[in-house]
Image (cartoon, rainbow, N blue to C red; front, side, top):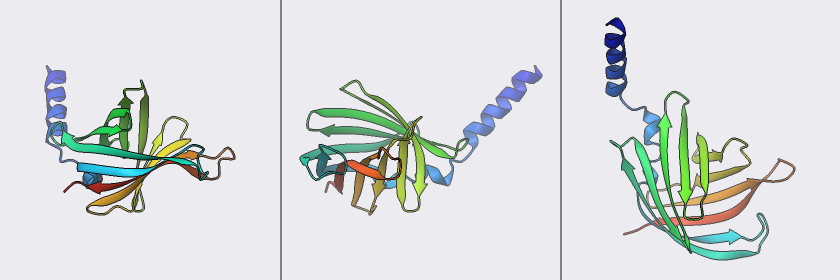
Length: 161
């Protein structure tokens, strides 16, 4: 009996807890976007392929989860992102029509949102130059010597009007 009441009390307190302020850090991303950029044939080298994309970002599940619906040159994917107070980090899971499953974690570092591919943290995505209607996104790989991040894919996002 005590265990049932205790469990119900804990569940009620979790449900009623206000979301942490950090859960709003991805609000800049919510909306409808067009993107143009370059996919580098070799990260850090000047040879690249022009790329375009569209992305629809919404909040789901009571506003606690950020959902992404991405389409670019034959690549279609979805992600879900959530901030967890327990880890004080953002967690994102990406899946796509190429069979990829990529788990990320990270958060704000200065004025950039940086999510690292886990567990090895040798790849990351960086959201930067964040404004109301535009931002830059970069997929980066750590150099072989582990000292430099090399951009493999760059997209400049603009909000659809």
